Image (cartoon, rainbow, N blue to C red):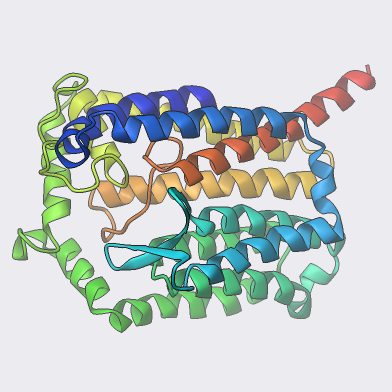
Length: 359
């Protein structure tokens, strides 16, 4: 299913980006070539991770490397000459023509660290002192990401952290002590940056600024509305002709909805839902706590980001830049997500092997 969704993403990116790539770069396959490279590398990474012994990630040295290395990369984003900026945000590290988005690595690095730590300290997780290392790790990642600035990924990591702590056995009262400050921090973060306040205003009434902050949401709704039940047909979107910004990345779902209609989106999310369901089943059937937390964390990363992207594109929450996993343009996200699905398969394979050995 991972390969099918990723392959469909290549087709969707071609449709959404061909015109813009032709006019801007002189090559209609500019984005598709990059995505195909990411797809091939993702398949290799997924295959390797399928065959690796994921239990080695539980080692003390490995877990700290998985946490600290992405945080170091997040810090390098702010180093002049290394960090790459685009549209007012510095979220990438550039090495020649290659760019890496460290926040994608940080999400899964946190999952590895939290899973390893909590699986060894099940009793300590019932105390507030016991949850502090996980809380500090997740909080540190959130601080580095919000400084880029990238509020959407920050919120995804915060939700991931809360969910992992809850699954790790944290008490409800401790959960509320952590959840309430995070909830109160959201309006503070919005007010701290004028552009976030403008986006909130555009969400409440996009027609108040149809050529400003409300433009992207309006064009997204036009695309979805134009698609109707069955769509205009594959490769026949109108909004991709430079009406809808970031049609190949953050708002690719709008183009899919326009071309394949409401029914097409239902089929797409049925496939996404199946992937999430399989992840939940792997976690439920895991034979140890570390495997349970790892499978849950990987599934949560994919599920949270998919849900948030769908809510943004449909105008259900304020607009923010967040790709649709496995579908949107972006090699770092694609390769890392496919690799994580390889780890998920490795967890399920271990369970199947043990099940056969008992027969």
